[in-house]
Image (cartoon, rainbow, N blue to C red; front, side, top):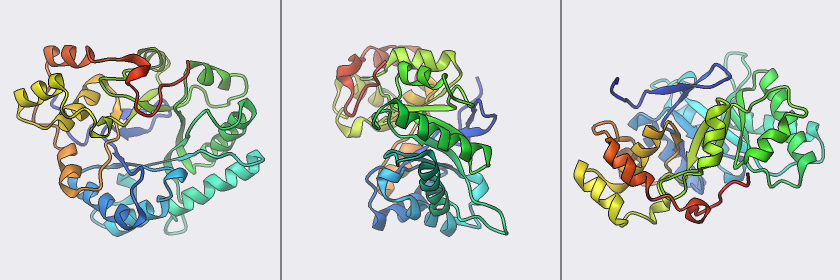
Length: 287
């Protein structure tokens, strides 16, 4: 097997590559977000995940501009999400275009774009709202303002629901909470079957499991931190982890996961930690 590197990508069903290691900016305050993103880019990350709800899209966009010319816009995979629907598909579309402008104003007469736009949650007021949001994303995709589109926190029923009207199906990505204590096996198997890339948010379990004896033993065995084990675990599972931090050292450490590998015994121990829905710290999907 080829040695894994921070430049590894997966191929989405949209045909676009996505860097397998991402950098999350949930609750990264505006005054820190720019510097955190710049630190991440200097550490080798080429994938940043934000959202309208995070209220820092403009700061992520500013970090991308400041990183040039050492890191070009074309080399960075930008993801954002829409959570709160408006009254019509047209208004949802306009709201998404505003996000695109914050993240990428475009240059040399070219329109800006994001690499991935997601519906943030199925809990947005019912099936009709989910339909309007998806149709807005499809329009962005058709116009090239979103290279790929997908969903977040969607269970099987919500993805199946899209079939009735979607021009783009299946979604290119489903972003869900994933870590050894919440492996969400049913939706993971469904996504794998339908070639839906799986992004893992909260891969570090917000540092609540750092003292877990099983995790600590695996970390000690390899001479790395528990968080490094958790990031590597996601990579080994074929997921796209999105570790988040505003601490410069931890940002770098969370990307320093390519000097060791988890063997079958390690993976078996970590897989054995699964607690099902009870293991989620944010939410397990509703299948």
